[in-house]
Image 1 (tube, helix red, strand yellow):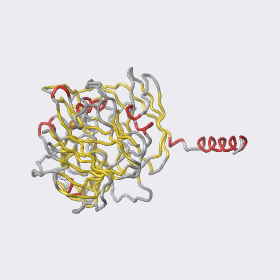
Image 2 (cartoon, rainbow, N blue to C red):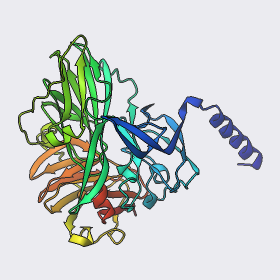
Image 3 (cartoon, protein in one colour):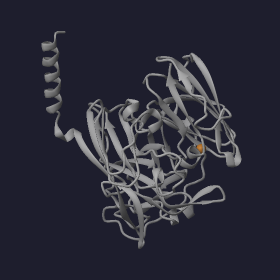
Image 4 (cartoon, rainbow, N blue to C red):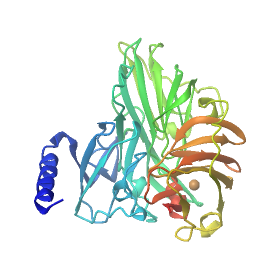
Amino acid sequence: MTRREFLAASATLTAASAQEPSADIVNLRIAPITLDIGRKRTIKTLAYNGQVPGPVFRWKENQRVTIDVANDTSEPELVHWHGFHIPSVVDGAMEEGTPMIGARATQRYSFTVNPAGTRWYHSHLMGSHNYQRGTYSGQFGLAIIEAAGEPGNYDQDIPLMIHEWEASLSEDEIVYRYQSINGKMLGAGEPVRVKAGQRILFRLVNASATMTHSLALTGHSMNVIALDGNTVPSPGLVRAVELGPGERADCMVEMNNPGVWILGETNDAYRNAGAGIVVEYAAAQGAPRWVPPPPAEWDYTRFGTSSPSSTAPDATVPLQFKSHGDHGWTINGKAWPRTDPLVVKQGARYRLVFDNQSSMAHPVHLHRHRFEITKFGGKPTGGVLKDVVMVPGWKEVEVDLIAANPGPSLFHCHHQFHMDQGFMALMKYS
Ligand SMILES: [Cu+2]
């Protein structure tokens, strides 16, 4: 290429980017707000665009998007695009090489969105032990990536993001004073208004820093059609959905039982602390009703195929999780930043064996990739694709990962307190 040709080509590139529709550029502003969560309670927190949750982004799969983030706070920040398969430099984790957004500075994130499904975005601050920042704050929002040509067979699409407020440490555990769905305590916000005969897609997101939640809609069953935004092979009706921090479930509900109901936490104390929202049929009256669902064990395998994929992995990687009391959490005996990196070769299939040598369940998350659950607590399965998996206490979970997105990727517990205590490693491509 001659210099003249090169200049002509660059001019074309510049012109092409200048012609990008402005609708593809969105702005996020991180700033302190006073959030009214209802019941005469206000919370001082950090949020996106002055609201909790942040704006819902609806993007088309493979659309090029640009997000200009202004950090209007006194500390560095960054935004993680959870469940997106994008380059490390824009993924939103400092450990992967994403630049921090300095205090009072701005940063442009530009990438092509995929894969389709319910994704979300949130702060990814590390090790602050400040229970007002990172995932403890109001910095979270939903991003829906729509598959091309997908009709969307439902009448309403309702995102519900659960979160807690005023965290403190009590006997080595994080406790909260208040809980909310979409930033409001149960009964304080607008109800979800429905009509008999409608099909509603509820996008449930656990935007908690540390809590696992079980959610039910009184009077209705929920058809789980996708987990972490990925369609499951065997959708199934459940009375309650369990979500660890970072997990999502897309639930289709037939509105066939008119009344005024509560969609909320099955745990009474959590629901009374605010974790719920009213679902109100047109013309229905009376106080919102809560009836506890029958107890049931949450099991990913019921949404999978009965037999796992027959593809053999190229390598098996055991990863043992253990607590060392005051010294924090370890992966194979080492805590971040001393954890051994997980080195993978592009295109290879790895079977990761998560061995939980503790009594606590851990929501284990891998950035920039998704994995397929192949065995859950000894039970083989296939077809359930996730980016966070809850590994129950003293149990083993096996997942298959195809290394298909080169660049450093964080692997960590999505429980913020565990992550801050060392439960983190880096996956690298050789
Ligand atoms: Cu954990």
